[in-house]
Image (cartoon, rainbow, N blue to C red):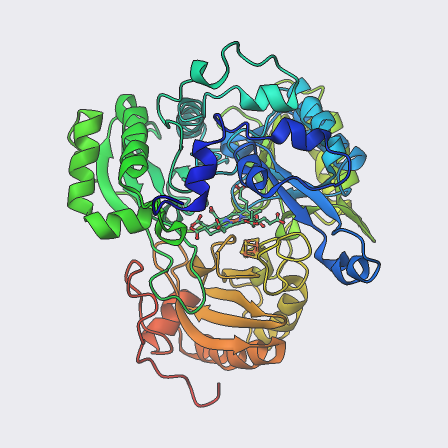
Length: 576
Ligand code: SRM
Ligand code: SF4
């Protein structure tokens, strides 16, 4: 290399606007994989090359190549799909995927296990129902999240409108997706014909994530994202404008203290008519100021740390041609979902269902994939109804007229989709991890349910079964289930071992702190049991577990991130 730019910068530059050699790679029959540079580019098309890690030892013994298959992440701003779109995804999962659908922590659906030779058919089937996976991954603005609960209908309508507008405005313009996957004609003259007015040839230094929150719910975890819009409501529930946040992020690397999770800063208040301009300005400042040499230091959170919030704000104001007003008051109460029925202003009901760790499949005694298919079949004939993914890996059956509610509730109940009793399980999230995630150091989705069984026994002994406590687990420190914003966070360290973090705020506004490093199952249960006992005995009225562990001195409070690894000086109880 002739300069210090990271390898990915060269790949993007040479890719002819994200084409690379994808077309040739798809036609290559001797392998189910694609070449390494294209593995980076295919992310911009919403796909990852993975392999089934459970099968690695056997495949290696038999001298076979790894069991390669692709994960496809659907672009779904605000998490809303029509029943027809849901049914198409369900059909793809059964026909080309691994018979499951994965609801993600960013409100969309991932399809796993799609082999290279079925990719085009899959993307065509998605295109038939007006779905795609453009920019669901890669160094671009990703899926824009938005509070999905339609019960606050005025505010929700404006929030989803903003999410969709930003999503479209910040989409890459390259026709590569259509050309490669849908056999579109290449534009005459090739790459030079294409312009990316917002991104340019090398797109962003790193991924970029935008969310829209509607208080009092912070279900989208606004402080975890590069860019956030918080709706400011008047007394009638109408949006008067948006508080803008910047510089949140979760990812870090074990042992590298210059990487850390960070909660977003407040930039100020803007009017709805300026929101898209602000989004573009924040994104282009990061495009120009972000670190393109070190990908571990390339997210907006580090740009803001390095340049300072005041400088960053001034540059955004200059580019957007406005001055932010001071942020307006608002209040978040939780990050969780409102399970069960809620009534909309339009008289229709919305049913929020619990999908454990977001994995939709038919398992013994709980045919959840079939049940959701039946529900979508019913909704097909109900005008205005839809399905909404939540940022907590759950699903809302929205806009159901009274006459159809009992039938839908019965199907959901029989499939075990109504929220469980345990306050811990209702507030749990786990990332995918093994066997598909290439970065997983430990189990997550497949392990958390059994850990919660054990913790529930402990909570029940202390009379805390019904208390809402947020627990999140990831198989590595990248933070895909936002564990550093959970009251109890577990982060994979190695097989069967986790770092235990405590003390984040219930409303998602404060990071946690490391409490115990490198613990196994028994160690986690043994560490938490005395804390649950102390909480049951010593909490103030209404005090949350995350606040209690700080007040009681078990962990110190973290600022917004740069001090995340600092020694807390806090004392562990002798019992732990
Ligand atoms: Fe993530 C990478 C899964 C939300 C931070 N994430 C990955 C990959 C693609 C692994 C890889 O690079 O090879 C995982 C694929 C696993 C699989 O088999 O499906 C993966 N991330 C997920 C999902 C599916 C977790 C889930 O179980 O729901 C989430 C998909 C979201 C979506 O629909 O777009 C998911 N990832 C997140 C979040 C949460 C969020 O955005 O609210 C974060 C933390 C927030 C943030 O970005 O800072 C997150 N994922 C990462 C990182 C660390 C980024 C960083 O700045 O350091 C990586 C690794 C990377 O980018 O190098 C990563
Ligand atoms: Fe994979 Fe780590 Fe993300 Fe979990 S947190 S999905 S293990 S990258």
